[in-house]
Structure formats: structure tokens, C-alpha cells
Image (cartoon, rainbow, N blue to C red; front, side, top):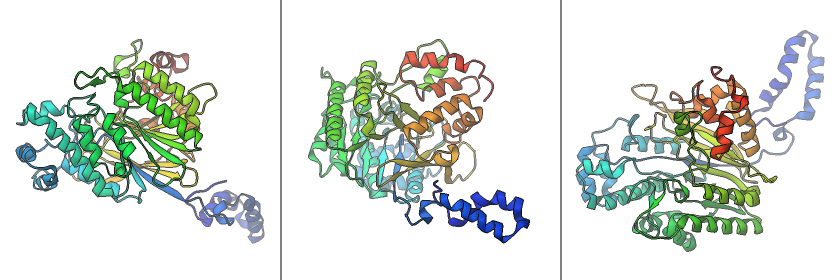
Amino acid sequence: MLWPNSSLFVWLDRCLTVKINRMYQIGYFVLVILISYCLPGLPEAFAGSPPSPAGNALLLSDLHFDPLADPSLVKRLIDAPVSDWETIFSSSRQTGYAHTPQDANYPLIKSALSAAAAQTSVDFVATTGDYLRHNFEETFIKAGGTSDEFTDFATKTALFVVHTLQTTFRVPVYFALGNDDSACGDYRVDPGGPFLAQLSDSLEVLKDHPDAAADFRAAGFYELPHPTLANHKILVLNTVLWSRSYAICGSDPGDPGSAEMQWLGWQLYRAKTSGNKVVLMMHIPPGIDSYKSAHAGAGKAATEFWQSHYFTQFLDLMKTYGSIVQIALSGHTHMDDFRVLSPGDSASPIAFRITPAISPIFGNNPGFSVLQYQVSTGEVSDITTYYLDLAGGGADPKWALEYRFSTAYGYNSFSAENLQSLAAAIRSDPSVRQIFAGYYATSAPSPIKAENWQFYACSETQFTSSDYGSCVSGPQNGGAKGDH
């Protein structure tokens, strides 16, 4: 029996309150008997064994910083080195937060990072991509820039975000690349190009790891030791290379996606044979785009995030190495979500945490999370999410605790097995579904409705278009409409 974060009195109250209320008149003698009866289940914290020490990691995703939000600054930003950008942004008269349908302006980014830094001290930061605003080049030109100036401006924007994150937290910050993190277009990557080279030089976690820096320069992925856990590695993937929308910059006929998959297989093999566990970091998770699929409707082919042959190869790797994957961290959807991948062949399932966005562009409130893990095993104990209620319409919104996974759903860990149980409960129990839908857009109005919840629930466990389609139209969902 475990009662985390409780005192002896709280624990005894849980065990005795009902009995004492009913038998209060019997007196002290019965109370002593009842306490003795409860003692075999006394928590370890009171039985001489201290609770396992825990570590914390900050999870950030989809910042989508918009340096063009104040048009009066654009010319100065173009002309200035990135080292002067902080001073320029601080001089802006724009002090209000960006709201839907805008990306995050400077005041919102600063507020979010300040709120994150004020939470429980963290051991490291995992940022799962998309640091640059949407439609960047088009908007830059409309704001007075030129096509010739955009590459340099996009690179400086990325360097500014990296510098701001690293100086704010002063702990290791691990960066995965998103589909908007490019100087040559959305979902476009320039392997070995100057954008990756300059980012590589700016990432402090790469400074003492030349092999990892070389991998990042080549195509934006890398492997590093875990900052606090012995025998653990962090594998940062560039899943943009596996996206259905990926296009290479230039005319290089190479296949960086296949090269990355081979690299991942080697890293997993080396980790397993060395007795290591791994944390996977990526921007685009495998599986189904539930939002696009819900809007397409039943009977239409679902939108898969990855090219199918890359998912097949990844699935094969997880059949062999899933047992060493502690958790997979991702973003991209802008929503608070999860996936649990069951590779088959009796392989261990893999838990995916999809971190909500800082950018409010898609109707969500800005949010970030703190992941708690056991320093003895690396297992994820809990995830706590904080949010800024922009959707509520208040004049002066404040960052606040939104929910804890353990409290909201009643599980003692964020494990793949518990996520499988939760996914089943979301599909079968309207009350659990309502809780999940309420947090999905970080306490903003949810896109999950009575008539479409199946599209979101099925994406949690189904990763191919055919399996997803069968789930959405399956008999287990018949008659479920209207019960949310």
C-alpha cells in the first residue's frame, strides 16, 4: 500500500475515519484495536524505509515564437545581431499576450518560461520542437523583409530561442527539431546545411560530445547520456524526416530518413547490449492525426503522421527494443495527449507523452508540464501540467496548476500499462472521457465532442489508417454518440 506525499495522520484518517464515525461511542479501547488492525498496511515511509527519491524534468513543446508580432521592431531585428534581440524586444510597447489564432509573442514566451522556472526545480529540460512561428517566410516578407534576408532572420530567431531557454533554466536543455524549425520552409530540412551547423554550435548539451554534434549537423538527431540517471541514454530524433510532408532543401538525392532509422537501430542495439535504458525525444509522434481525421469524417482515409515504411521499420525496432524504452516524449498536435504503442509479438508497450503547446494558435491555452521520475529506476511517477487561461477571457490571467495525472485518473505512474487502461476507460466510460476532453486543449474549449470523440480516442492506441478506421467504425463505438 502506497500513500505518496501524505503524513501518518492523513493515512490513519483514510483507514479509520469511517469506522470511528460509526463506533465513536465504543471508546478508546476499540480505537486502539482499529489502529493495530491497520498497521500491517502502514506505508513504507512510516515503516522505516524512506520514499524513493524523485527527479523532475520540464517538458516544453511548440513554442512557435513570433518575432514579427510587433511590426515596429522588424527592421531593427533584421539589422541587429541576435545578441541584441533581447534588448530590442524589451523596448516594445506590446505587453499583452498573444491569443488564438496567433502564435506566441515575446510577452507570452517570457511569461511561460518565467512560470516554468518558478516550479519545482528540474534536472533537465526536454523541448520537443517547433520553436519558430507558422507561415514564417510569407509573414516576414509582408512585414517588410525580403526573401534574401529570411534565411538569416529565421536562423537568428532559432538561436534567440535556444539562448533564451538555456539562460533561463541553466540546466541541460535537450532540443528536438520540429517541422517549422527550418530556414527553407515548413517540413523542409537541409541536411548538413548552415542552419543545422549554427544550431549545433549553440546547443550547450552538445559541446562536450563531438559525435552527437556531428550527427545533429548532418540531419538533426543525436544521442547523449542522461544527465542524472546512470545507464540511461536520451535519443533525440528528427521525425520530420519521416513525415509524409517532408521535403529536402535543394536537390540532394540522399535519404536522410533511412539513414536516421539505421542510426536509431544501432543506438538501440548498443544500449540494450550495454544494459542501458533510453528516453526517446521527437517532435512528430507516430500514428494518426486525430484532428484532421475527425474533420474528414467516418469512411475517409485517416491521416497518418509518418510515411508508412518508416513506421513499419520503427515498429520492428520496438518489437526488439521496446523493453528498454522508458518513455517517448513528443509534441506537434499542440494538445495534451498520449499514445501507447503495442508492437506485438509479446513486446513491451511504449508510452508516448504529447506535451501541450505554448503557442495558443489552435484554440488551446498555453501549457507546459513537469515530469517526475524515480532516480533509482527512471520510471515516470507522475506528470503535472500548468496552464495560462487565455481562453477564459480574463484581463490578467495567471499561470496555475491545471492537473496531476495521478490525481485526475487515479494511476500511480505514467506507464504504458496504465495508459492502456486509461485508453480503454476513455472509450468505455463517459465520465473518464469527459475528464480527458476537458484537459485536451489545456482547459480551453475542447475539439472533442459527443459526435466525434471516437476519432480522438482511437488515435491513442491505433497507429495505422486501417486499424484506426476499424476502431472508429467498430461496434464498440455504436450508440456512444451523445453520451459525452
